[in-house]
Length: 444
Ligand SMILES: C[S@@+](CC[C@H](N)C(=O)[O-])C[C@H]1O[C@@H](n2cnc3c(N)ncnc32)[C@H](O)[C@@H]1O
Image 1 (cartoon, rainbow, N blue to C red):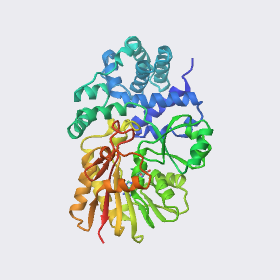
Image 2 (image 1 turned 90 degrees about the vertical axis):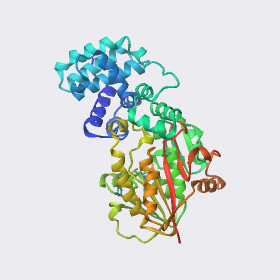
Image 3 (image 1 turned 45 degrees about the vertical axis):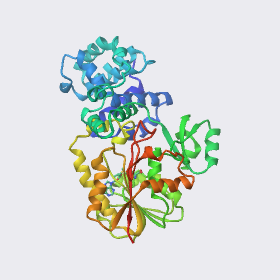
């Protein structure tokens, strides 16, 4: 019996995530997956994301039957063990025999033949008790219990509990362990009808009238998706782009992969839009994804960007920890360290300061992240405003009310997505990623 193609691909992706700090969601969209059948693609995705979501829980079960500390195992062996454990614990329709057999063979395929009997022994010992180890979690968990049950680092859950309360911290943890909704942005009702004709089942978005949630069907296989008339984009990300609004000259300072740039372009079809991206390979991705004729893409560090004339709208959607997107990018929670937050803060302050240099009098800048951490959010805005009296923080409530009046905002519950003057979504509280946004105006 040879290794199933889905498990072979899942193993290779997990190894790259572990050894090369790659992102699983990007690798899962690579050419290698195109060669798999839809069922194998589904299984590979399920295993990769499941292993990354549940990693610490899987490790603690494996450790109970391993004669060696997990820190001493080769990464190839540990990954193969995690893959089998995930299937044994969480996938009811996968035969245990196939999961164990393939993991043992993956250990051999990776050149770790001497570790194959060890992997086989560990997995066989755990096979019968695995489903019980995936017990349904109780309510009212403490921070350490949340961390253990929902496989999140305790320092992160502890921060959320302090800032948001234990209940919201629990909601975030639960949300992060599930497959997140696929949201799309549509331009016009005719696309909805076309998608439904192609077998896609859609529900209205919770936040925006242009958003739909995909309930059934493979959206990436539709004509409208292939032709760039429908875009996969989380609703909170769509809302940030809506906050940027309309202008005659718009600057997107940190633009790749381009979800917000594309949304801004479709909202401003006749305006001049400049989209800046630091990394050449990401700028290339941006070029492929945003082809609107009115968008000029520049590969540059925004900190060094020469004057391009003034802009009446600027977006600084800065690089961040991504703690609001852990359901989509679960590897982040294992990589992030508390000290990273202060490094990110410093970088974000520099980028926001640089972005504001390009803003015209009376113009508006949106600062945004997909982080839940105050160091990357309010603290950045506070620090930049402190030494920039020319700029004022606007109240996002007024901006959202204007979007509501224009029929763009679908929700009336503004309180739940506002914190003070900021926009703030919380995964698990809202059915979207966790985003933060502030609107700054340059006084005329
Ligand atoms: C959060 S992502 C932006 C996401 C994007 N706005 C979207 O909606 O698809 C941040 C991007 O900023 C880029 N970046 C980081 N530092 C930068 C800098 N100094 N100048 C320009 N781009 C930068 C990163 O490479 C990354 O692609």
